[in-house]
Image (cartoon, rainbow, N blue to C red; front, top):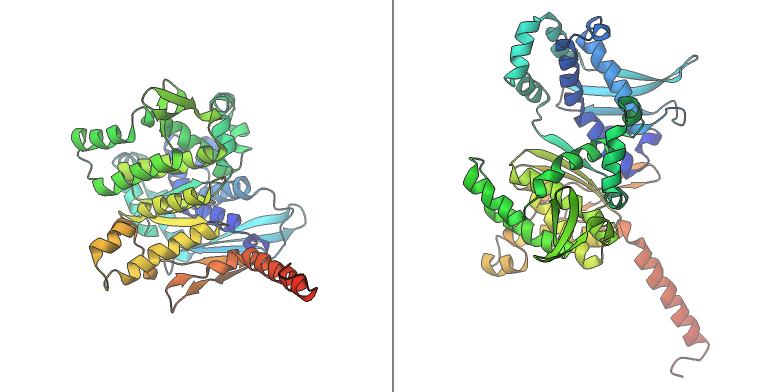
Amino acid sequence: MVFTGPQASGKSTIAKSVFFFKNVKNLLLMQIDKRLFGESDIMKLSTKNRLIKEIRSNFLQTFGTTWCMDHDMCMEYYYTDTVYIKICLKNDPVSHNYIWVDLSENLVDFLNKYDDVKLNELTYARNNGSIKKEIDEFFENCEEAIYIPAGRSMMTLFSSQLMFIYSVMNDDQKRSLDYCTQNYLERIMQLKPSFSNSVQTLIKNKIELTDIKINRENLQQCADLMKQILQGEYRNVDGEERLQVAEDRYVKINFASSGQQEAVWILNVVFYYLLNNKKSFFIIEEPESHLFPNAQKLITEFISLAKNGGNKILLTTHSPYILGTINNMLYAGRISKEVDHAVLGKMIHPLKWLDFEKLSAYYVDAGIIQACLDEEFESIHNEVIDGASDEINTEYEKMADLRYDSGMEGK
């Protein structure tokens, strides 16, 4: 993925950009559905032009107005070595920063073939899932992109009110929300009824009542960490969201701590997709928000479990505790072939071990994205976000030297 211009200025923008491009597959399916339902304004345009129009609309809903963007802003995303989408701004005298969408030649050819398919054939292919499969194979990506934004505690705090407000909003009002927030809200509203029982019951029911293959040990590790992080268990009982602290005691979720409110839907969303064995690309912003350092360590371990089953994770963070925990899991993976597995497994469970070859790490400094991996020690340079510790220690040492020079040392 390549970024130039001010859109490369922050980690949140990068996370949103990945989600934006991953979502193009859904935009394409949406345009095929609109053609099937015979929307008159849609029928006049080719599949390519309908998709470009939808990409522009989704870009504005994700990033906001282009008025504040520099004219040289450019985003380019490669799905494969040859399939890409490029978005730039053109300084148009009428529309000012016009969003220009450029598609790779093979992507254009792929889209054009849908214009020649008869509606009855298209309907059959859409209903039996072959179109989705074809799109997944073309983009070489069958994962569902799951975006979990920062600022979750506020949405959890007003969860019941948000459901009411969202239910009475029309489509134009919903589109006034940024797309990532809208997608997150819709996702958690859909998932809430799934948590009417304990996670242990959910695991048990999945094993006994379905033929879905699950990693029971991985889910049990998730369940144990969820309980430790929340100091209880989330339940949705007749529409009321609770943090169950014991079988006969609970706290309504809007009265829980801000850390619990921040963490609860990271835990629930990841657990749900692992429970249902759905291939996913998790994009999680700032999982450390409002959490005590010990809980930051635990939620990092929890997120690491999401990789099992072929899932992928994009994580943004300000926390040295998050990076430190990742480094420990990397080190466990590194030494696992050299030490006693059983002893190492008691320190860090094998399902949490990380493979350095499958990890990348970057930090953003003054709009420039730089790698921060230590190839020799197979770890992340933790100091890139912990410069404050160096400054604090240096400041303290200077004051200690000042006291020593004044002759006050030892008095």
